[in-house]
Amino acid sequence: MLKSIAVMTSGGDSPGMNAAVRAVTRTALHQGVKVWGIKGGYHGMLDEDIFEMQSKDVSDIIQRGGTFLGTARCKRFTTPEGRMLGYKNLVDRGIQGLVVVGGDGSLRGASTLSQETGLPIVGLPGTIDNDVWGSEYTIGSDTAANTILDAMNKLRDTASAHRRIIVLEVMGRNSGWLAMVAGISGGAEYILVPEEEYDISQICDSMKAEYEKGKRYILMVVAEGAGKASELGPIIAEKTGIDTRVSKLGHIQRGGSPSAIDRLNASRLGEHAALAIISGLSDIVFGFNRGHVVSINLHDAVNNKKQLDPQLIRLSKVLA
Ligand code: ADP
Image (cartoon, rainbow, N blue to C red; front, side):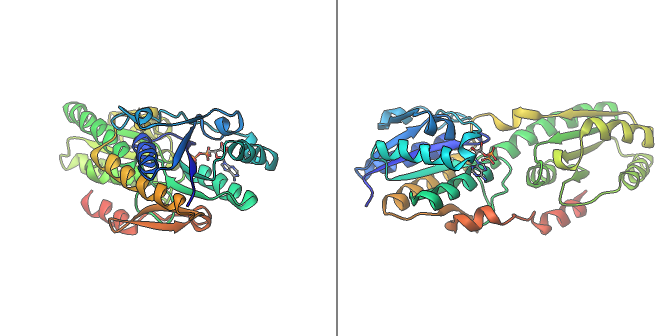
């Protein structure tokens, strides 16, 4: 049994990280284990921005987006010297294990730290992209999909009023999950994702044909990894001759009060992470599979690429 653990958030923030940290903290305290918060991701670990937390430190945060611990990207941590300094700062405080909430990069860093130092580490997938291998869910992905959906509902009103084509660019450099899920849920006619090739001339031909048959408007959702709305918009306008507008949601997708699903799932994952690290387990990531919490090997999680569900790609075409 470990007697003292730390928790941190790292990399891109996502709604629900607070709920995860809260659950880790309160579960640890419930077990009579000391729990430390590390501020600003690996930066805080290296700069000794580390404080012991009590239950009240995680009060009033479950409803907030972002992460009250702060997050960062830290170049120094990518060097062995940087990681060794971080490890020393933890050991100096008697910290025996670490829970890292973050995306692919943060979990990769955690995996290296654990391999090099033997420090027990448990990861939680915190990213709006839902691209962590081994889990069907990541903390924040549900809220981000709902944020896009809200924007789509609004864009639909104005697109319909003017009989326009609207191209909405959403986040997802390497993963089309957000675009696909929001696109299907929002009834988009076209969804472009990095996982699938597309022919813009063919798309424009079919847009024109649909307008000729009386369609009032068209919504296209494009993941940033599949193309820029600012470039696709003018091409579509030129090829179709139809009034086309573009919109880029940007960082709005990262913020906002977390959905019920993100709060609940983050709380469940946080409890599992705390109990696992306290019991001495290491090198695992907790995620979801068929609605159940599962543990995934940390090394596997960071060394495999999650594929976009082909059933979603198929469905998007059937329903368009
Ligand atoms: P995310 O966790 O959202 O994917 P990043 O990829 O930016 O975000 O990773 C966050 C931080 O994790 C980086 O700034 C760096 O400190 C650390 N990190 C990422 N990749 C590695 C790696 N291969 N080795 C060590 N540390 C890493």
